[in-house]
Amino acid sequence: MFVISIAIPKGGEGKTTTAVNLAASLAAAEKRTLLIDADTLGASGISLGYTADQVKSGLYDVFNYTHSLSQVIYKTELTHLDFVPANISTVLMEERLLRLSENRTVIKMALHEVERLYDYVIIDCPPTLRGITTNALCASNSVIAPMRASHFSLDALMRLMKYLKWIRGVSNPQIYVEGILLTMFEPNTKITEITLRELKNHYSKFLFKIVIPKNSTLAEATFYGRPALLYNINSRGARAYFGLATELISRESSIAGIEDAPGGRKLSQRRISHLSADGNPQNPDPEKTETN
Image: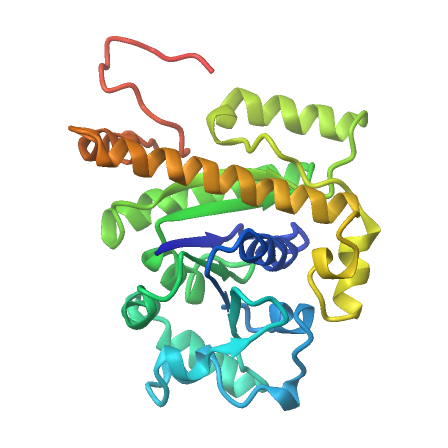
């Protein structure tokens, strides 16, 4: 089971859109996938057609130790996609969840129960770093950082990279950056040019080959409570997220192959341990420098 958090400490970057549509695309590729809505707004549930009256329990109840994770899993329209809603309907519940999430191991321990049932777990995180996002990061193998082209988005990405260094030091030394995903992408604009230049200068190794274009279908699909591929499979947005899923599956298959080879696990560990504060791999030889 591979656990991926979708996180960046800024709203409006496409976290929920990415979590829902990546999870749906993995399921369409017949990967057993669990989507966990860790955002107190519950946007992933809305995007899948779940209304408040349909949700009787969720991640909140797992943190309260009144339900196990398997007891709060809901089915979706896709055979291979299951869903855990946030189930937070009041400010008091939200405040209590923030207190409960100070125990950084809740999600990690809860996932043990279902680790044989899924190939992928996708966690939709809120636009903050403390609290529930910390819990998700401590349970994750890797992080996908969706971001649009903007100065503020670059600042948020830098904050995430620094925070991941802290997470590695205190709780999850194995976590690494799966990739940076450009969302709402508009080519041939000045802001896109500047953002791409900065990303290639500092984080080139983490850029996904796929970009998510600015596409109205992705927004329209949420009104109908469906992932884009069930709303309009031929849309640019749906095709882009399926391409992302394909890239991700190919990448993880390659890593699994390396780890299965003689000495491969050591190589995989080096990939993680040589990450600097900004998320870039460090050269193990301090006498040598690596250019991007």
